[in-house]
Length: 432
Image (spheres, rainbow, N blue to C red):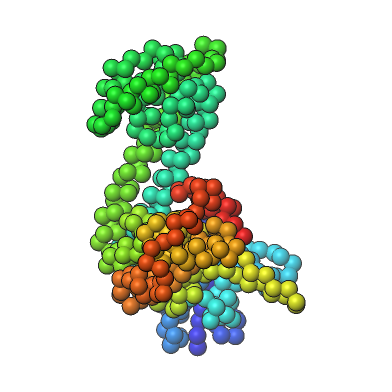
């Protein structure tokens, strides 16, 4: 006999179903989200395991949280199934589209029973790789938080303090934050002295070019501008100060997480292989490692990794119509990291630059050519990680000119995407 387990997880409780080969439900159980509930689940699984020779695989709709971690630590194979796929399977058992937690657990178990070849157990990544996964995503989220707060601050300053925006392009820079701390309003900007500004810049750690910077900032803040009423201007200055405190925290979070991520990534045995590729630094390399993990059985071929990253195109054919488009369903964080990899790869690899130039000459947009380049890069990365080899330019791009063709470098208009944009923004602006 062979048995399968389905678990419909929730915040406070989980529904469990065990089905046998014929589809009959042997066990129907609800457990609490506590240690006692997990003990009850493991006791039941041990009883059912004694009746079959093959290990009982558990299907659940998430790979995150303590329940999947505890199940895997206990030696239970866990398969994470997309909730959208579960909803499609549910229609097979309930044409009326009725739904219940116990019914979803039964559907999950039957998915493994009927289509085991279409689903794989979660990859067995090392503890270090899992920690890099957490740190890399936390660092990326912190970068997005910093951008969001800086954009909010820019929006507020535009309402009452345009001269400050004219003085600074990057509001998250240490000079901009130090100046706004001294002069949160146009009135304070008009009264700001060069000596105070010089001392503030020195406190931030600035050591070079201080007099020229002070003169530029001082001149910009003393330009005449339209003003809000005094009470409104004071209120907006308080709003900007509050956002400044949040921005200081966000900048500190990015720096701290980047330092921790660097230490963890440098300890991983795959770090040297990943960073041997042109354009892959510590942070970008750590993001790629975080998403692909270090279980090398996860991607049997480079084709699977390319599809997972979204760099490989997808073909839709029906009748006499065939359309090849970019892949939308993908790991968005890995896809964004791969897209960001294209520009530094062009700058550090003559072969990559020649390949990109060829694609552009064939009519590809910048985004399409960049995806094609990183699609090739993902294939090479898969090969090097599987064979434990470092990147070799002569083997990666054979029969390429030794120097890049400078006339085909991407223009600023082509490469307008922000290097730290969110995955949704990258997907919206990445071309075809």
